[in-house]
Amino acid sequence: MTGLRTTLSCFDRIFDEASSENYNMSIRLQPDGLLFSIQDHITLKYIGFQSIMLASASEIYDFIGKSGLLRSNYYKTVCITPSSKYTIVPGALYMPDQVEEYFQFVNHLKNDEELGTCKLLFDDAALIYATELAYTQIVHDFFPKAVILPGVAAFSNFILPRYRNSSTSSMFLNINHDNFDLILLNDGKLIFCNNFSFKAVEDLIYYTIFVVDQLKVNQEKVELKLSGNVDLNSDLIKLLRKYIKNVEMLAIEQEVQMSYALNDLEKHRYIDLFNPRLCEL
Image (cartoon, rainbow, N blue to C red; front, side):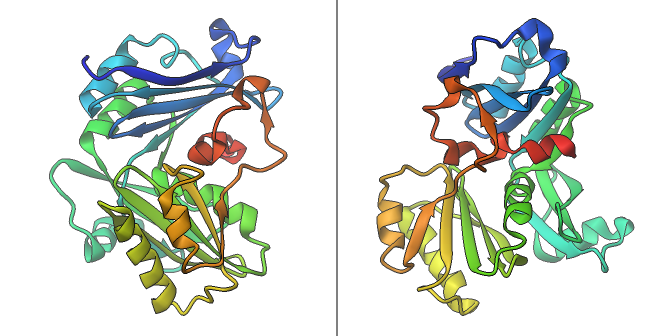
């Protein structure tokens, strides 16, 4: 391996790798590495987190193959895979034998991609998504019993239950390295969900404002919440506030129990890894 770099490693002193059967693990695979959190299954407290930067899916595969910690026997494992191509089908229209037709109506499935499906929490809809075979192979070989979710499902499964009783209009941007998922809720109902690629901050601003204009969102009243790969004092936030009045970081829920060892994490970057509901799937 040539690209290995541990950027963050935080574990409570009570963490014991030999007791992995008492823990839940949520792991996110992404093009530049992997991240994972450890939750005590009994106390429901998050007691560990680590981020590893790697240069490719093949390096991720090699790293996991040699990692005793990641390959331990956990009580439950959730794997979050990268997927920027997906479509949502209302439950009333969804037919399992039509999955490929639904997907290819709006996307093109490549030879190195595999289709998957999952249900959105608290919403009668099916998510159909494509994942590169390199990542599905990692899951198949190392986490065969894991719950598998594409990034947008982990993101939406954090948002939908939390805001389903909201009476306001809320927009959420979860930013990845070169793409972002945008979700719009109105009165707790899912109005819009899509992924956009970008090369510069200006691209991200353009797509966000385009959605606002097309869906006639009130820029003075909508609440825009950011998560993922974004700095607290970034130019993106300053630019967004020129167009949208209420812009803030998306926070994890207050009732989520966190070890002192994780206090310094910028938790808006890892909301999918600190979502107790994922371990209920």
